[in-house]
Amino acid sequence: MSTDISSAPPQVLPDQVAALRADLRAARYTVEATESLLGPVALAALRRENPIPARRALAPQSDPASADSAHSDPALSDPAAVLFRLFVLGDTLPYSLVHAVLPTLGADGALQLELVGPAAPPAHRGEGDHEAVDPDRPLRALLDLAPYSASDDAGEISWWIASDLSELATGRALGPEHVLGVGGASLTLARITSRAPVGRVLDLGCGGGIQALHASRHAEHVVATDLSERALAFAAFNAALNEVDLELRQGSLLDPVADETFDLIVSNPPFVITPRRAAAAPTVPPEQHEHEHEHEHEPADPETTWTYRDGGRAGDTLLAELLTGLPAHLAPGGSAMMLGNWEIPRGGDWDEHPRAWLAAASEDGVDSWVIQREQEDPAQYAETWVRDGGVTDRDPRWSDLQAAWLDDFASRDVEGIGFGYLLLRRPAGSDATGSGVPAPRPGALCTEEATGTGTGTLGVHLAESLRALDLLAGTDDDALAASRLVRAADVVERRHLTPGQWDPTLIELIQGAGFARSVQADQVLAATVGALDGTLTLGQVLAAVCALTDADPDEARGRVLPVVRDLVRTGMVHL
Image (cartoon, rainbow, N blue to C red):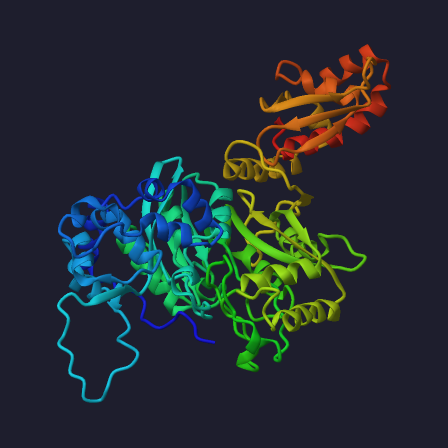
C-alpha cells in the first residue's frame, strides 16, 4: 500500500521562515478567517474528515486565467482561501498563484523550504516528446500547514502548525512515520495540563511539538523528545515559525533525559493496543491515530512493529514501562499529565493494571490519580482502530483485522479496554528514590471513573485536585473536622420527589465544573455541605446538623467525613 511519506520534512532556513511568517500574517491565515470562509456546514464536514463541502466552498467560481476573477473570486483573491486549498485540502495550484499569496517568501522560497514541490508530470509521455518548461507550472503542497488557535492564562494563541499531509488531502494511507497535526488527543492533553508558571518542562514523545509550544508560554525551559527524526524536524520547524525556543532531543521514552528532573512532564504516548501477530501486520497500515510520535520497535520481525500509533509492545506494557520510570524524573512539587489505554482482565477491576503500574510510584512518595473517561469491549476497540486505519466493513480485510484484534485480546483474556488520564505529582519536599532522602510518606493512589465534563478549565481543576491529595494525606479525621471548609460555588443540590410528597426519594450534590460529578447524599450530608461557608469548622457544622436531625453524632461522623474527604479531592469542597 502506498503511503504519504514521499518528501523530506520542512527545512529550517531562518530568513525564509521569517518571510513565510510575514506572509501568513499578512494573509490573515487564521482559524477565525478560514472558518468564516468555509462556513458551518463545510467546517463540520471537515471535522468528520469529509473534504467535499470545503472544496465546494472554496472552489473557483470563474476562469482562473481571467484577470477579473483574480480580484473578484475569493478562491483566487483571498490569500487565506488559497493557502487553505493548497496546504490543507491538497489542491494543485499554479506557480503564479502560490507566488501571489506568498509575496515575501515567493514560490521559489516555498520550494526551498520544501513546503511545496512540482505537481506530478503527465502520466504518458513519448520518448521523443520535448515539452517546453511551463513558466506557470503547477505546484502541490508537500506538507499540511494549518492555522491553530487557543487561549491560556497568558492570553490568546494564534499559531501555524506544520505536519504531514492528511489522508483527506492525499487520498492515500498514512505511513508509519507520518507526523500528525493537532488531533483530538493532542487537544485533550493540552486542555488537562495546568498552565501555572514552572521552571523545566518535558514533552515526552513530542511529535510536531504542539504540547511543547503550549508549555513554552509558562515554562522557563522546555525539552521535547521523540524517537522519530522526522517528528523532531517538524517540531523544529513549528518552533521556528512561531518564534519559540525549544530544546529538541532524539531518543526512546525517557532515555534522552537520563537523570534529569522536571517540574512538569506531558506525554501523549503511543498507547494504542495493537495485535503483534505478524500475519496481521501487512494488512493493517500503522496509521491515523491522534498521538504524538514517541515510537518503540520490537527487535523481531519489522512487519510486527506499529511505530506510528503504538509502541511496538504486546498489550499495554509500554505504559507500564513508562510509568515505572517516570516518577524518578519528577522534581519536588513536579507533576505529570498523560493519556493512556489499559487492558481490563476478565473478572478483574478496571483499574487493576494502572494500580499495579503505579505501586512503585506510591512507594517513592509520588501521588497518582487515574481517571477512566471511556471503556470499550474488545470488539468495539477493534472496530475503532480498524476504521481509524482507513478500513471499513466493505473492505475485504475487515474480517481478518477484526479477528486479529479479538484473537490478541483473547490470548490475554481481556474483557475491556479503558481510556483516560494518568496524573502524578511529587509533593514538595519529597525527593526521588535514590537521592538518599526517604519519602516523608507513601504516595496516595486514587482511581475513579468520570465520564462527564463540566464548565471551567480542566487543567486548573486537575492541578488543584492533585494538590488536594497532598493536603489530605497529611490531614487526619480530627484535623479535617477542625478545618473551616468552604463548599465550592458551582456545587448545587438536586432533589427527586414523588409528586405531592415532601420527603425526597433521592438527594444529589451536583458539581458544575470539573467532571460534573454527581454524589448521592442523605439529609445529614446535604445539610452539612450546604452549611460549609468557612464560618464554622466541619465538626461544629456536623454537630449542629445532628442536633437538628436527631442523628447520632459518632455514626454521622464516621459516615460523613470519608465523603467530605472525597469532596475535597474532587474540588466540590475547599480545604
